[in-house]
Length: 119
Length: 111
Image (cartoon, rainbow over all chains, first blue to last red; front, top):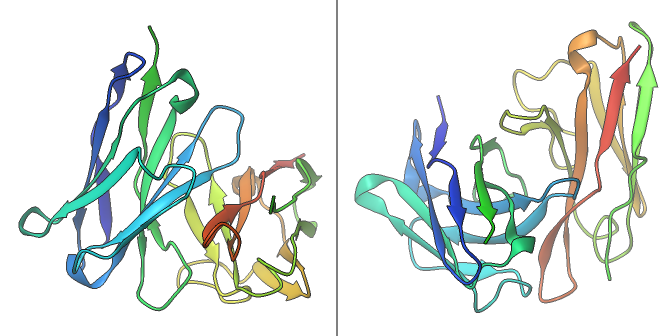
């Protein structure tokens, strides 16, 4: 059974960075991409980008280019998303989701990580 | 700016059929598949429909998807109380060097 287990809630000050982990199990980690999606309170989900776990391929949303970094540790079957220069508008629940190859589908999601940015 | 538009709310009584629409444009729904997700707050979003009309294994056949031109729809027949949730459409968009778009979500209430 596919599981994506995310790290716990974070509280950060404006200007700081946050790094969220997404531990994958139940499937071959390096055969899939991991996407990151966030949802601020009362807002629609917002796609941040993806990273293929099998190599260094990645694509970031233009909105987050320069502030987001997606990495992975294949030995730990874990994906990471780091967002820098945090501001209050970055307060949201951040989700990782699995993307099967050659599809436009996110077929399994993590529970989400709440990031609160507050001074 | 590309956007996917959904009605903010929908409702029905148990056993009824409800439909949720998702309107886009030629750069997203008109060119790409649509996926639908069910989300209960505090839980992981669940894939309901992929490739516009396909159902993942384990999703009841009460859920069905359709697409025509730049619009898509999710239909739920035989409505059940457990269907009360937020529903989101999503589609890839060709603008801004490619991005995944989500609809604003539809809150389904089972009366």
